[in-house]
Length: 232
Image (tube, rainbow, N blue to C red):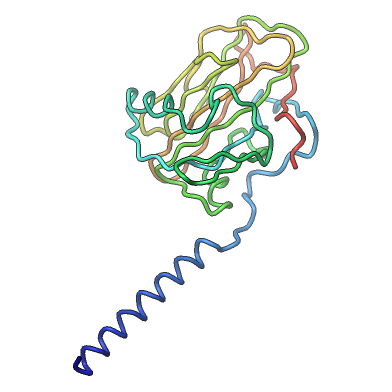
């Protein structure tokens, strides 16, 4: 083989090796914690003064290049990614395997009214675009509470369940707006009530917010939030 060809081949191999090493290093980079999120420090937490739910268990994102239309989103969230995804009450640190990739549930408290999923994923070296997030929280009520509505916002599309029943969905490439979607009236039972959501993001920023409104359309209070066992 001519020397000139050997030099070209060697140069190409060096460039390929450098690219692979750079990509590997980037993937293994330790990033700072999410600035808007923190680990729960107590077994239970009250909602924010304006009713927003600030404690959640969130699964690391599932890759999903899904259109944000109503039908596409509904089809995507109804697909089974892991066992008992519509009924499981995970614990902090629990793991599931989706498409051969091991993903972890994390308990978080948000410092704001919304949960910044971009911060959540970026801090863990996970993809932030073309992804599906699952989140769960437990709303503990001291008594039955009737005629409440779940009011939500998300970037982008999302579908929501309360105690296993789908109650609201919003679709399309949208920004998070407070009370953007509001469910029909429902009853929160005395004891634990499970709120579950799936949020699909196309690209860029991604977050969600949620609260309950009482019969007078005021933010519901007088309950606590938990995520099962204390955060590890």
